[in-house]
Image (cartoon, rainbow, N blue to C red; front, side, top):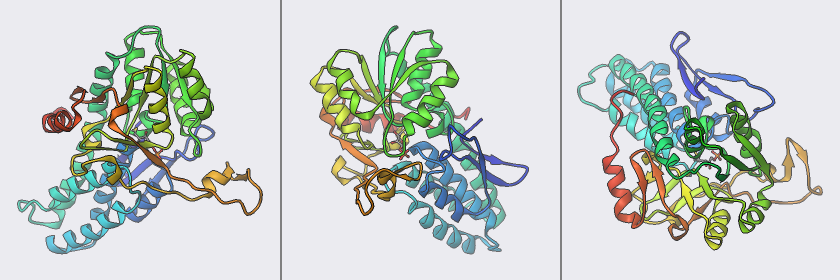
Length: 353
Ligand code: MRU
């Protein structure tokens, strides 16, 4: 089952509610684009490519909801819906990328009527979602070239089917290596504060029968220094033109320790996550989330009453710590400034979807 999908019978958007996994598997239904924006903020759906697909279907939903009789009125309604969706989370560039891709379709002069725009937007959102699945698989098998039989892979956050429409990015590389018959073992960072590793990555690995151990985030350095990690694989929420990588908080520390210990560090990044408009990682907006996420675990306080917390959701890893970047068009090595630009140019929508 896909993480994000359109229900053609009910004309609604459906998404796995990831806040409840692995304890409960509930599919939430959305008939209002504003509720889709809230679901992105509240992390029913999370992971850069999944957020992008949710926003694309959210805009298709906005077109469906709008009662605008003509083209111009509908385009005005879509601009306002796009602003609401774009504001849902700041770091993952896939959100703005997906919204602007759909707006460009809506604005095509050949779409003369409101109903033509509505149909075109839903078709484009579906195409974007189908492409995501196909390119993730391609990217996974490119990345699997880096994995040797017997490797132990350190992984952060959740980058699997749940973080995308299906299959995944860094976890997709692990799935591809497993499909190739390689015996691999995954050290799963639990990923405080929202525990995407412990809850979601462990769940996905277990379903596929891939060997893993969950580790406390603080244990990663120990495993790297003692020679128990062969490669570090992570995702990215936005990668700048120079190869600086924003990803889940804690990634930077992993990259620095990996370099110190001579362990290769590879972000796995679809080209939709590469933001060539940003020269370097310090320009990437870093989301700071509610302090309650740090002060509580599953709603239970873990600190004295009145304690305060800081909660940046992402950090930036400077490109000097990045061995290479796995994309759907192959593995990109330094100089990133030149080679990432070429990779984005080479990426074409998959005609087969
Ligand atoms: O806050 P989240 O759970 O949305 O953060 C997700 C990540 O940081 C992933 O590593 C990233 O989106 C890339 S993997 C698809």
